Length: 163
Image (cartoon, rainbow, N blue to C red; front, side, top):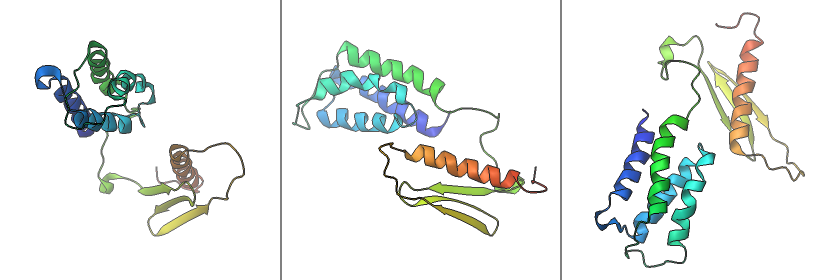
């Protein structure tokens, strides 16, 4: 299991196992922040934060303890079970290769307001984005995907792709 997954699960366990079931507001907010970052890759986990946010709403004393209730514990236990099973789409058995074992190494990047790029060997391409007047909001994950697909399309168009 990935180190970052183990890390967030460990943080949730520590939170639930806080002595006297009364973590401080600061601990509640730290965990909520970590889980909020997790929700970038696990958006259907959002309901797990609902009870947590309701429990700390309006509280301002950072070192005051806030009692864990059944609903929050249940949501956190659900997250602990769900995270390892839900993160990542696996197409291959291996998740790590050295650059030396690859036929070709490409690097991609995207920026919301600047453009898309991909680089390989000593070659690089940059596609500048035009400002849009549209009300359609495009997120960075979509642009990163377009950069990756552009690189794959570029390599696939070679007369002799390196595969």
